[in-house]
Each structure stands twice: as structure tokens, then as C-alpha cells.
Image (cartoon, rainbow, N blue to C red):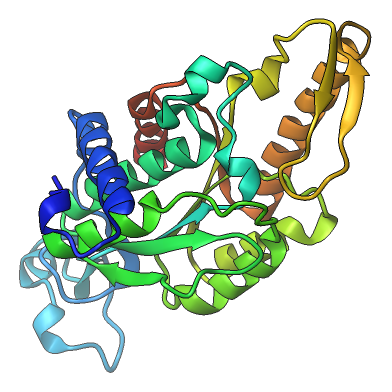
Length: 307
């Protein structure tokens, strides 16, 4: 765990990173999985199948035992076990700093969407690093942040990644998912994993196009849709005045009147995000802030194993 007294970081960021480290390591307990295998063929100890010998094949790959049994020249094909490279991107726009309607609950910053998204990504990074893979990343709002950390696999690298993820959302920072993800396409490089934690409060049609580009380049793309339970259920009653966190005009409404329409719109929003991710070839997981991180990770790991 990061010790704030030994860190050159801002003390507040160091404190957040230490708490994030604890939550991430706790969530990963019991969820470690095995090695990832690359779709590329190459020299390795993991045997896949035989195929008929073709001129130009290396003679050392001939399986003489199979020849003795079948009188056919066949070569062994292997599957290369390789280090996975993961880019983990956290939405740090102002809407992610919201922690619900309850003022007492908001005093616990771990209820905020940015904190929950950071914990998800940090736990996923810890899972990857424990099995020998590499992870990096950082934040975005209208663009990828300049302090994005390239993937690495050393313990000190994990601490640097935590520091990036622990930085709070910027006040009044708006969201431009499309621009940020387009930049992510250029940074991601060779095939690996790109995981995004965001509330996806950017409903423009072009938002999900970069996800399809990442998938087309061979990446596995994972979208954690981070929403607060209060956003999903609107527990308040009576008249209320809502103030936008990213520059939107205030809105006054009688919640008893608009509740049914609001809940219908929220369901449509979640369904639209799920379908758009599926159409792009990305994997979508709804990650409400009150659902334990380990449960979301278990769902993710289960899907990866089935795949």
C-alpha cells in the first residue's frame, strides 16, 4: 500500500491513492485468473494442433511420432503465451464527482462515481499485474490527460498508476468522450485491453465509433458504466432544483410528476449504452456505485473465461 509520508505526490492525492490501493487489493482477493494467450502463433510450450506439412515449414516442427502413426508429414502449431498490455481510462469530468443526494453519504468520498470508477480500474490493474501482465492509463475529460502512464508491470509502476487514478475530477470539467477515445485509439498501440470507466453522459451519436476502431485493431474493449444508485432510481420526492455539474442550466421540477418519465429515460439511456457497446464489439458492464467492486470484477472475469 502507498505510504503518504514517502510519496512525492500532493498529500491529498497520496491519501486517496493509499485508500484506492487498499480497496483494489481487497476486491481482487479470490479473483486471480491464469495467463492470457495471444491469438498470434509462435514458438511456445503450449501445443494447439497439427496441420499438414507445407514446403517452407521448419523441419524441426515436424511431428515424427505422428508420422509413425499416420504416415503423414504434419507440423505442430503452438499458441504463444504473451504479456497482455492494458490501457485503463477514467472519466474525470465534473459529473463523475457526484456522490448522490444524501449530504451525509457524500461526506464519504468513496460513494462518488469517480472514486468507484478508480477502484474498479485499480482492482483490474492489480489483477493483471499479479498475473504478469502490464497496465497503464490515467484520466480524461474533454481530452486525454497529459500524465497518461504507459503500461508497465513493476510494483512501483502500479503505485504511479494509482496516483493517476486517485486524482479527483476537475471542477466544471466537461466530457468529450468521442475526442478522448479517438486519442486513445492512437495511444493504444498493439492489441491488448482498453478498459474505460465513465458515466457516459455524452449522448452524441459519434461517441462509440472509436470503440469500434479499437476492436478493429484487435483490442478487447471493456466499458464500465458507472452510475450512482440515486441516478438510477431518483429517490427524492416533491419539488427540487437541479444544478448541472458541467455547465448545464439549472432545472426545477416536481419529482412526483416527472418520476415515471425520468425512470423511462434512464432505462433507455442504459439500454442505448449497452446496445451501442455491443454494436461496436465492446463489452459493457453496468457498475452502480453501491455494487461491490468484486462483484463487477467477478462478472468480468467470468465473461473473459467463457470467451
